[in-house]
Image (cartoon, rainbow, N blue to C red; front, side):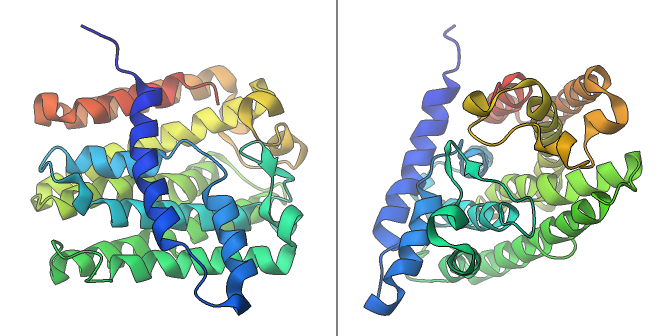
Length: 299
């Protein structure tokens, strides 16, 4: 049996969303040309495209008409990209590099970077609610997908995790705070990506819950590995500034549990995630491979 080629797999689905970006993300007026250039800069700056791949992979458990999923998978990646632009700002993490390239505000300035992030955030919902783009998606699916994305990324999700992360930089954090930050800032959007596949594939409520729980576990493992790599990797390997977590006193798993215990926790989470999707047999093989990749990755 041949080994699963994760690089090619991620590249294939990443190519689908990048083709969508190329066609959809074009300036509509000369006055906003610079804004669109900034939005496109971060969208095409590379990245693993894990979230779109999870949308496609989870959807593939239920249906095989993958073109139906592309606008939604692209919208999720746009929203994720907005969060990275804002995370990198001097008022947040103050990073100079992202994915091996200068961060958005280093190229376009802080004001334009803020607006580029705002533009990508709102564009995600524009795409999801566009009936012409999504003729095979029911109004009920659109509503559920948009509502759950807002829930996963607002104050009860990613944004809530970010503010908790900023507060923790003051030096007051414990294991519970780190869990809150990681599950909200990272895990919830990854979990949503998995649940979205079930929503678009007409999965049952049990299916949605199952894939959401799988996503929460791989999402937390993903962030734990990120925390470890910030200590053990290099800027060249990781494609972004390393060592900043320790320098800034950020709330991370290694800061609370140490590197070895953190890695064991990530492995346990992946085991739990694999057990959850064992219900689906071979149709969930891509989801299994993504889970394995998350624990093994080096960047």
